[in-house]
Length: 446
Image 1 (cartoon, one colour):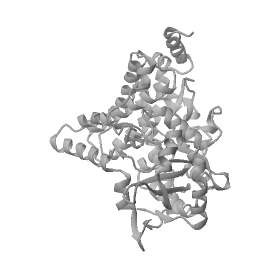
Image 2 (tube, one colour):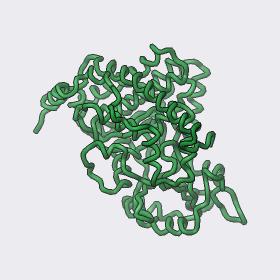
Image 3 (tube, one colour):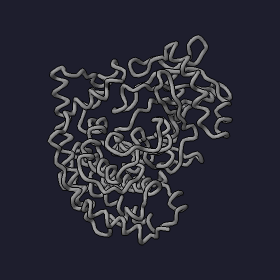
Image 4 (cartoon, one colour):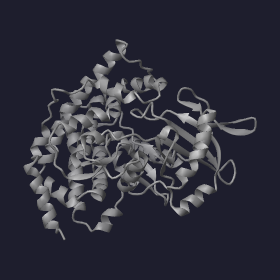
């Protein structure tokens, strides 16, 4: 049996492959693809009528561009040497993919909340994406450059501190580790900001299927239907509706027995196609309205197309053939507590999908307008959450051994974050120029 001492030594040995200070360096490869070409390649198998929405959302700001360009950053990270210390990566660990959600016990937790790109890979790729997103957000908030660097550094320092703490804990203690939502409250030190935090938690607690019933549905001819709000929400056509009903049983089979029983207590009411996110726009996504005891007992499920992770072309094969299974398994592994309705199946034209609740006390942190101190505190919380997720799926003792007790790694990654924030701003400008030139069409403000 490998001892903790052996595992820590393995981590320190990884410094021979990539020193901690080497993470500061990033130079675009000579064959780096044009960012717009990468986005267009991703769009080839997406719904063409929705692509202008994707480009419009990404063109809104460098942060929005970074959110939608996980494929580009994956290629950039893959062009550099890596540690070989593998975890289940989120694959898209930017600042806005952390937030609040409800555990099955109805506790409100803070954690990663997007897993479309999850895949096994070197731990530092997630850390670098988080740090870069912090730097981009800080610049958009108008923070002075030293505070931009500090915010990125704080995210990585929190990651290192958390991993080192978790490396000393027993296996079950690590598995049951979680971040309660109340830890968000210290972000808001001033009375006004503290009230805003409480409001954020209150809004999260109200984001349920019952609240969505009023927002997303209306009664037509005495029957409850999902509201038509093109192009963002459109009724599922006859063929899509029939297909969704047919594949519902396949999804059901991926749930555990007691959750199948719970799902069986609901009946299918209506379905619609819904545009979601930034990077996901153009993929096939539906929402389904189910009713339980009566029409005032709704359940909204989201059916989202699962595609190959943007990391797959750069890393060895993962354990799952089905993309939906990959997403669901990755989420179950990384999150402290999971959605009871999380499942997967294969739909029409052999497309892979996964199912989850549309709203379950979910709320993402809004970083726009945060002060330097608040953004740094929020970045620390995200770094801590990322470390908790990695500690469940990878060798936390080896990673802690690699990171060590000094601040070498976080200073290097913070330097990288500023360099990559520059690159993100340049790539965002390239997309803007392509929109102006008519190379791609963008629908602003949708």
